[in-house]
Amino acid sequence: AQRVTQPEKLLSVFKGAPVELKCNYSYSGSPELFWYVQYSRQRLQLLLRHISRESIKGFTADLNKGETSFHLKKPFAQEEDSAMYYCALSGFMDTGRRALTFGSGTRLQVQP
Amino acid sequence: DAGITQSPRHKVTETGTPVTLRCHQTENHRYMYWYRQDPGHGLRLIHYSYGVKDTDKGEVSDGYSVSRSKTEDFLLTLESATSSQTSVYFCAIRTSGRFDEQYFGPGTRLTVT
Image 1 (cartoon, rainbow over the protein chains, first blue to last red):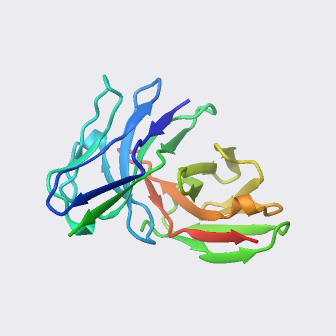
Image 2: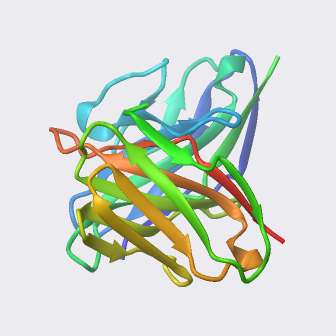
Image 3: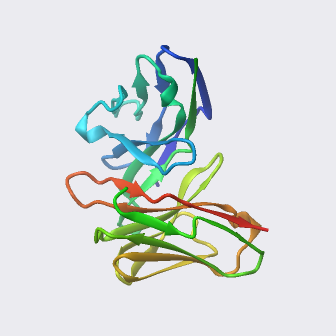
């Protein structure tokens, strides 16, 4: 079974401070990992995917297979980054079909 | 938004009544998913579909059924709504290109009283 753990429910930082949102996973195969963001009362949006190693809105995330982690980082937080962030793993279910498993989410609050 | 809409956007219903939520997509995607979002649980997969008349159960399927008679529509039915099914329901499609990623609908907020 696949599992995604986000240990922090809430992360509060000041504007300009560095941000790290933690994500750990458990999966027996080769994982595909994603970060999704949900701004207040909006739909979830894909923020970034590990396979493309991109930087979106200043955020980056590196897959560490040894530590089974995929932490999201940003060097200088902005107030507009305040949102709910979900880490997700795409893997094969018991049915043999692919589906996403989400972590419980971390709310990021960036204070002025 | 990958052409995904959900209806209704808000619904209040009474315990024991049947409820059907609709997800509609305009881009002919094969794979569709239903999730529920609850505080402390994130998003949990209810059912998913790999095509017309091809559906599978997810992590929290008890009390829910789905149907997909057309590519563009994926219906989620609560056979007899309970208060524990009060939640926000999201539909998603999965693209089948290079990256396996999902795009979400705007959500349906369901309250069961």
